[in-house]
Image 1: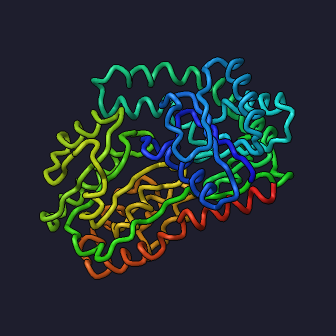
Image 2: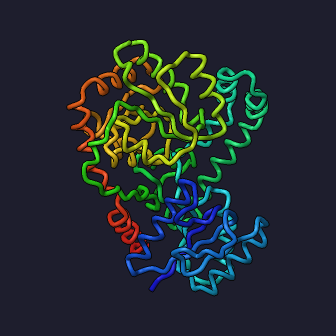
Image 3: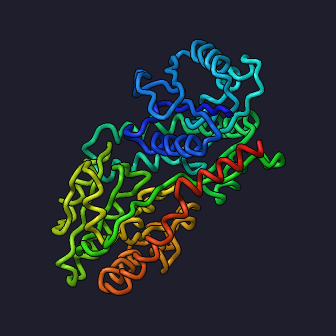
Amino acid sequence: MKRILFYSENFCGEHIKGGLEVATFRIAQALKMSGQWEVYNAFRSKSDGSDKSIYTDVIKLSTSDSLFQRSLKDFIIANEIDVVVNMSRFFRHEVIRKAVMDSGREVKIIFMQHFAPGSEFKKGTFSAGYHLLRLNPFNPLYLLRATIYPLLKYSRNRRLAGVYGSTYENSDKVVLLSQGYREDYCQIGGFKDEANKITAIPNIFDAPKKDGILDGKKKRVLMLSRMDEIQKRMSVALEVWKKIEEKGTFNDWQLDIVGSGHNTDIVKRLIKKLGLRQVKYHGWKDPKPFLEQSSILMTTSEYEGLPLAILEAQAYGCVPVAFDSYASLRDVVSHNETGIIVEKFGDTDTYSNELARLMENEEWRRSLAIKGIEGADRFSSQKIGARWLKMLDEL
């Protein structure tokens, strides 16, 4: 039996909070269940390593690069690892490569990117800082972002472009979440995929099996999101909802906002500033009861890796509405079939009109919900696991 080691910054257990950690655990579990692979996890935090979960063994690594490299090398040798998968961000790829080379074993290295290529460039800019400052000028951190971050932009962007290229060179395979990200990845790194190293495999999502899943639906729109304004653009969602309330024909509908994060202050402030009456901010709660009751998922993200919130919503018969602002969206949503796609990002008039059309037409909404439920199994552990097995066999 072959042996595969997943590296992530945090331990990837079944109950660890975090999208990357959950995605890693599901991939590891699918490979283990195949009976062809033993799985291991290396990490730096969120655990002392005592809970091995599904793993044959685990190791907690040091924050020091030299100790990290030495411990990882020894672990690879002791456990006769065949493949190392770097599930973290770029900046560990060099020390992982050195540990593999020092081990003397023929170990394949896979790098998996869990975010849209180029999304790292969007936050540390003047426009991002100014946008936050405009939404809440009383938060001193936003003033700092608007003034200090842009000074670092040039060197940071050059460094990131180099890292894209070196990660590609130092990996045997690069896994992206969507085939649509391949061109962006190569363009940022300034290379062509002549070695055919880049492939696309989405994350695993096992849809819940439940009869009568549409029976408990209410006139509720759900926004299920981390409160990160630059990525999720909650302000745009609230502007859209303002237009819905102004129509005056949807007084029996409610928008539920579920999630937490470092821009919660913006959400609370805008709800009050816009005078929204049919909005309730819940903070972080178990999303399941909201998904069971909600009829529509409202998402206004400017970028995503793979929108698992949309997959989860579809599995619960909650119809998504989203901007066509990232390549992986169309891997998940078919316009007017399993959800609604608004072409131009930030077009709140079109978005609100499409949302209203969905809210007022229960029969059409139910039709889209049924198709979304039926298509959710495309991302099952069995199907995505099979794609991982095929890729590993071809390494």
